[in-house]
Length: 298
Image (tube, rainbow, N blue to C red; front, top):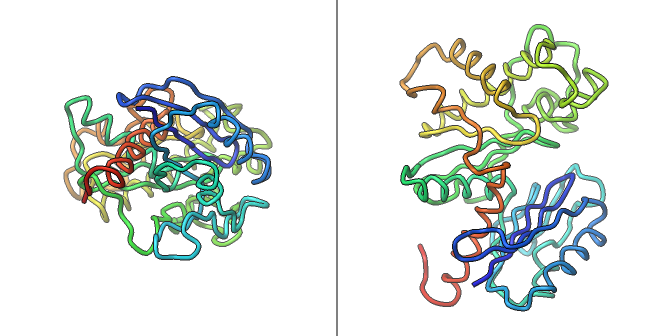
């Protein structure tokens, strides 16, 4: 069997085809431009494969995930220009008569980490996956299922305590200036530093500010979800950043409850090259195929 994967990000789409062992057979990166242009290129790519069994789409949001909603499968009121009210799932279904799973980009990554933990013989029952890139989001897995009935989590918009050296920064979120996304997403570096985060040296104090905000997110996830692991991914994150986050978390959390070894508890993705969403999509596509064609999966 062959499964299709679309990891739809604000900067690029990663389309891939894999097998039942979740191995990538082929992939392509497509710049995120307009909906018509970007989705047309996705369709053109997958039309090269006439034997796809199923597909999964993990998209930037907000998206509509309620199957009883007339907007199910849509990207809804997103800050991404031109993408609001885009019928993403419907567009793909017009061209591919196969089972298609629909979720958020970070849910796809979270599921990929969940599947990888099982394949590595160290299964995680509960995990939280944050991604820090163009935006900020979180996926939550509890015993193999996603959290959220009325919609997917919007953990990128939790309010934060401001760092004392960051009080003059307005924040970039058009809805909530002092939320996690508004203060810690990748584009905040352009405003604070005049350059991309990858070009800012790790000894710049801005990284301590970022770690302060990310550690608050980890603390909230710890207290609300009590996960076995909090995974941090996306372009903003690196091992030096993780180290700073652990230090900030340790200080502010003050050993309130036991979370174990912080080197294990707060970590980078286990999937190589941050390919968590692609692995997750292959697994979700497989799940959707069996749900629709063979047996009902609870």
